Image (cartoon, rainbow, N blue to C red):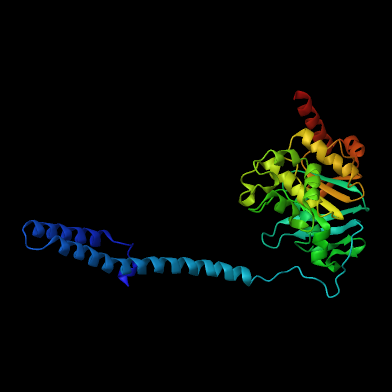
Length: 340
């Protein structure tokens, strides 16, 4: 058992074997044994030490596997809290969204993400959610995707409680682009068509053009057949974001949620992408979560969140007249553009 615990080929064993080999060499010089005896001795020593080394190596791998299996079992035994209702609703979404007195506390950390949130969007409306980091912007997206259920209040989609919508249907009808874009270690075409595998190559290239990434892809050595690394490590941050946008749009979703996914693109590219939402997707309900104010896209409603509460609500001009956080942010960004 002690030998199993030792590292492979202990220093003591190696030095002892080397000393024996040296002694045998002196005996060869003295004519007492032949060189063949030396070769036999070395072979026998290796045959003796390798099994002991292998036992220690296998014991180490077994310990690693045991720890990994415990972690796997923890995941497999996890009870999913979000479940379908007894008679879930399946079908196309018109796109109306209503938050009624919604409050939410993250179950793992106990952090209060939202406090008494109320707003209403009609089908085809465009809404911007603005606020400081940690204000609760992404929490709204998480609740609309039903990654969590609300603690208080209710969320209505097309006048029906979100908990009565079938989960797979709800998520497939939503086009969501998160802050941290995840790409698989596969070709660009496969990454774009992940949400809609039935599309052809022409459609893939069309939606990549909408996301202003088509020209960048064509400059790569293998074009759309280029294999990106895990999480898209071979691409820049802006390229990953635009590929994720193309992947969300190619689903032709009924509603779109963009979670600060234009932070790594330049102004010209940003305008190209937003103009698409103003034309091709003008009839789709769109929610853009951002730290920046987009002058190109006209929003029906803008809400400003701070510490989980709505502190400002209205359209662009109303919020400018209110001279609050939104107005300050707008003037700061205007000065930055002028300085550039």
